[in-house]
Image (cartoon, rainbow, N blue to C red; front, side, top):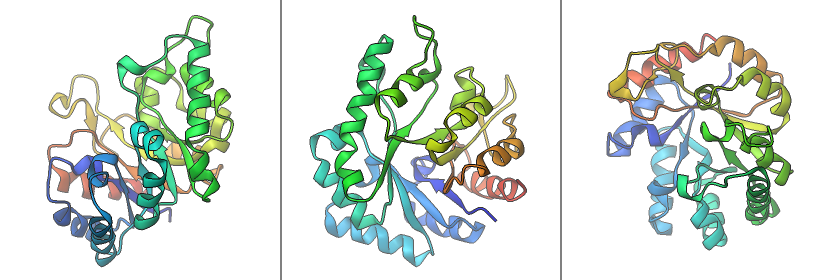
Length: 253
């Protein structure tokens, strides 16, 4: 059975995290994914305490999101955080709208920038890659997409594929898996509510309760030996419900 993880960003509104870890362990999750705001301000003692909290609940943190500002501004600190928490794969998760390039050549340059940003991490034996949202799949003036240009500019970049965001970007996830499956080292598993529902949860749904064809997607992804499958929901109203229903559905795929 493929192991299932949990992006802790999904529980940011249900603090403290120390109450979330037992729920995850009881439901059968084996790992979590961190995000910059939860550990960037911690000192070494705080990071070690976080890792101990996870281990007490039988959880590890093999993957983590790190903001571009930390990765570029203090790469050695980013590497130290990763080492203290046992993170093996680092993903840059987002680019603010006012920072996004406007044309193909600029997106290519951004891919080159990420390629350089990841060098200290790759040199240390870690995986480094990009996590997508929907804006990377908009068609540029030359007919390409930002995601294609990022990969062209960063030939060593891994990919944490957020499938539901690909769909929201009006792109075909199966085509992207077929074209770039060898880049995918982690996948965000999230679901999209039927049109006109779950507006209070920004249109997202617990896994198995929405419209994303996860059974077929898992079959396509398994061909590429993806290591990490990670539940995410950007705005759940009931985190306990999310945790329980999503892993129950995932375990059927």
